View 1 (cartoon, rainbow, N blue to C red):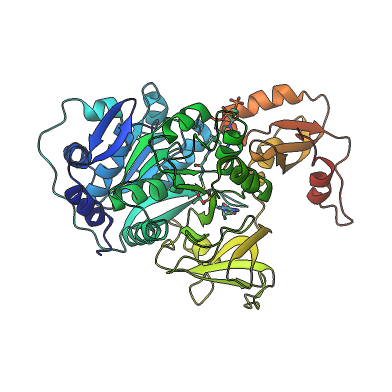
View 2: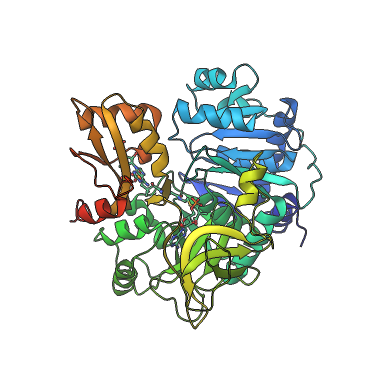
Length: 494
Ligand code: MCA
Ligand code: AMP
């Protein structure tokens, strides 16, 4: 199969032309319709200056138009750069200046904000404008090589600014091809698509599994347990973050009967607790298939389709992925069973961080293995268990929050002497962001939270801010986050 993503998509558009690709709000689009509309949209994009290698920044709501925009950008050979709709002006400004897009597609009403951050150098438009009087002409697909960049997805880091992970045509095509075989996707499948489409999970894993295999999907604007349960009778697969499964279990309409037509429930992006795994099986008769991946790599491991889906394990590496456990500091590869850093290599591993050669080099070993930052071990059956993270990262409802970013915002405030941001167990989000601060003078946690919402996407804003006279420190003066995590472990216990 060609390593070019557009050719891979086009092969499906042609082969499954008359079949339904996607449904939303009671309307359906076939493969041929989606291809035709995206090809016409590509003509419009080209007329706006979009060319191979240029970046198209997208912050739009989940819709068929956004999906078409993705396919259209791939067709032009430009680089698709989707952004979380929750990002604030302060956050967006950085992405726009770092990625220097030629075009920004934004939501109605946010044009002035994008004009401001684009500083006159970025053409700003909306989906409505792009789709108005769409030309009939279908742009010819731009020739692309496997190593050309198809998308940039920003991920934050433990220190410093977010990094744009460059994913190539070959990365995306290879991972999709592997996953449809592994998870047995066929044209008879219908996926319940309730994830956002600005992350690898909802955009590449979900959409490519559907399109590459000729299956169909139902787009829901966001996860809502009732709507998802209603769709199960005529669907076969759900992909979700653990919060989806927690919320399904909390809904009494979710029963064995409701799930009877489903063949597969896949979970990832964050750890699925063994308790939820077991409760889900007891309720529905289905064992969730847990897999593990990263923005920089796409999917890396998966529990087997046949064979045991082990609670608490993310499964063996995908057939085309090499995975090893090493000592973080030295890179020495560790024997089976020992805990260390997870390192990976394969056709799905990204090409590096956009314009950050040093940061890229620092995250690869000399022999080309990528250092994930996740800690784990390989069991005797080859299955991987993740036991923690070397990186200081909180995953809340499947979304990553780097404490350093939230701490920097708090530390900059006149009413805060120092802040420590930690993740604590949360019954719905898995982990929740909590800030423990040492105030300097008068301090109103609720007012501070409100103010933080101006600068930070809502999911990063601490669910609670706790003020202490003194933060616990070790003899070197370093804040003891471990101690804080222990002290507040039951903060959200139900
Ligand atoms: C929303 N809020 C959150 C989160 N989502 N807070 C913390 N963590 C979150 N994940 C905020 C809302 O802004 C709101 O704040 C309050 O929490 C309550 O929101 P609620 O209505 O409960 O949330 P929701 O809209 O139902 O969303 C929860 C969600 C959603 C369905 C879990 O966050 C979601 O779809 N997550 C999936 C993310 C994802 O696709 N991750 C994949 C990336 P307020 O009331 O203050 O306004 S990782 C990836 O791609 C890698 C490759 C991988 O392995 O998959
Ligand atoms: P992101 O940068 O958003 O792609 O998040 C990637 C990170 O999510 C990984 O490095 C892991 O820490 C975490 N992750 C993804 N899937 C799983 C999983 N099944 N279990 C535990 N952690 C996971």
